[in-house]
Amino acid sequence: MTSPALEVALAYHQAWTGKDFEKAMTYVADDIVCHTPAGPLSGAEAFRGFMGPFTEILTGSTLLSAFGDETTALLMYDTATYPVANAPGAEMLTVQEGKVVELRIIFDRTPFDAAREAAAKA
Amino acid sequence: MTSPALEVALAYHQAWTGKDFEKAMTYVADDIVCHTPAGPLSGAEAFRGFMGPFTEILTGSTLLSAFGDETTALLMYDTATYPVANAPGAEMLTVQEGKVVELRIIFDRTPFDAAREAAAKA
Image (cartoon, rainbow over all chains, first blue to last red; front, side, top):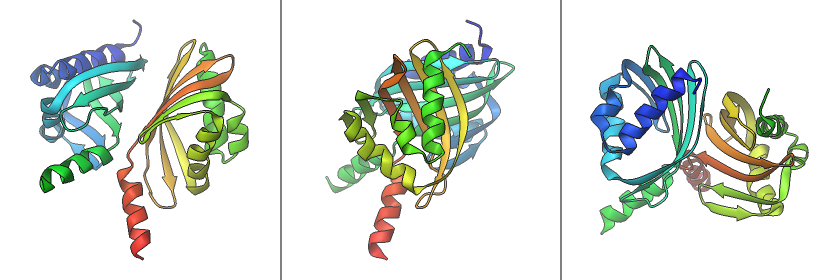
């Protein structure tokens, strides 16, 4: 493997998809900037509040594709969660000195919103 | 560039983001399978019906990252559209003999649904 960024991105990915979120956080820079579908988040604690709860509803995952170069990694994966059976995502991770300093995540919020509404009505 | 798949993926991407959707379609296989947030589509005509209208509301785009190997390309980009100012997307494209035979696209439908609802109420 010739991509230092991909090595870190995959270590992070394997940790959170393996439900070891605390290990995943060891790859996250204190001053991470995360671009989520709902807007940007700054700092590791905000990131923990966004990504931590997702790992708790995770029931499975499949890495579909992963590439990287010196500073950037790009991943696409599928996940299964309790509320949503098929929830694919894509991430672009910028890595500096072994830590993720910027992460853009793309996923479809629609099925999660629908599951939340259905649960609220039940 | 050492990725035949990325060459085709970028040619396709540059065509549709350049609003030349007919040129983009020349890179699409007749039997393309497209995995969209709403579910799978089969065939070039179904794909045209999905992607064509999007290019008509497109007002700008920025390619954020692109990688590929022999058969697969992975892209992340941001787009601006009339209803939604920031609509990032990610695509995984499988290429055979110079054509895209499979395409997985991930984007957040939530702001598009919200814009549609707002327009219906207006």
